[in-house]
Image 1 (cartoon, one colour):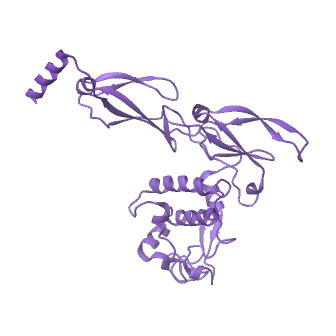
Image 2 (cartoon, helix red, strand yellow):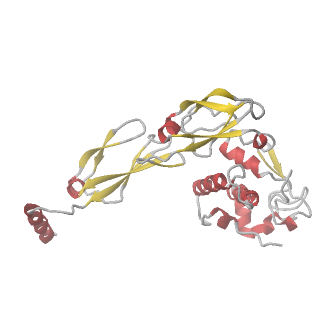
Image 3 (tube, rainbow, N blue to C red):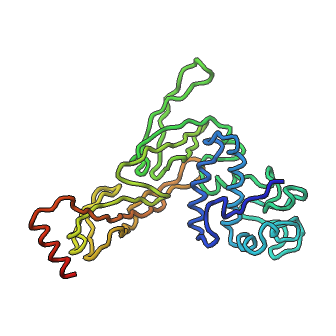
Length: 306
C-alpha cells in the first residue's frame, strides 16, 4: 500500500498556516487538478487527495486531531471513526448537509472519511467551496463550453453572445446570450439550463489578481519617496490619487480597501456582488541611469551629509 502524503505537504502549506492560507492553496490546486480541466492520467486521484487534505485542515476539530495523532485520529476509535466508535468527537461526523463516517476495511482506516465514493465525494467539497455548476452527480456530465474574456470584463461583468452546437452534428448552432457576473476568475463555471460555461480570463498587463485582491506596481523617484508626494494610480474603477508618505521605502505596499474584485458565490448562476477585495499598490524606486553635473553634485553632497 502506498504511503499517504502529509496533508500539509499535499496543499503546500506549513503546519502554522492560517485558514486563509489553506483556502488560498486549495483554490489554486483544486482548479488546476479538477478532472474537467486537467486531462492528466493522475488528475482524478490528485483531485481526491487535495480535497481530502482540505476537508481535514479547514476544519478546526479535525485539524487539531490530525496534528495530535496523524492519520490514527481517523482510525477506528480515533474520534472520526466508525459509527459508535469511542473518541474525543464521537462517531459519525456531520458538516452542514453532508455526513462523513468511517468505512471499515477501506484504506486501512487511514482516511478521515473511510473510502471514497458515497462516503466521501471530493466534488461535493469543491462545489461547497466554489459554488455554482460543479454538482458531482449531474453537472460533471453536462455539456461544457469555454469562453475567453478580458481581465476587466471578468472583474466588472459582461454580456456575451455565444454560438453552441444544436442537437447532433450537422444540425447547426444556436445563439445564446449569457450574462457573466462581476468577479469571475479563470476556472469559474456558470450553469445554465442545459449547458455550462467555463470562464478563461486573459491576463492584464497592468493588474495581477489573487482571489478577490488586485495587485499592481507603481514606480516613483527617489526624491518622491524621500520627500513624499501625491501620485495617481489605476484601479478597476478608474484612476485615483494616493499620498506617498515621506521616507517611503521601495517594496512598501499601500492598501486601497474595497478597490479589489467583487466576490461572487452561489449555486447555478452566481449571486449579486456581496463584497469586494482590496487593491495593493507596491512601490518601487526608479534609479536614474544618467545624471547631469548638477544632479551628481547634489547627490555627492547628500552622501557626505549621510
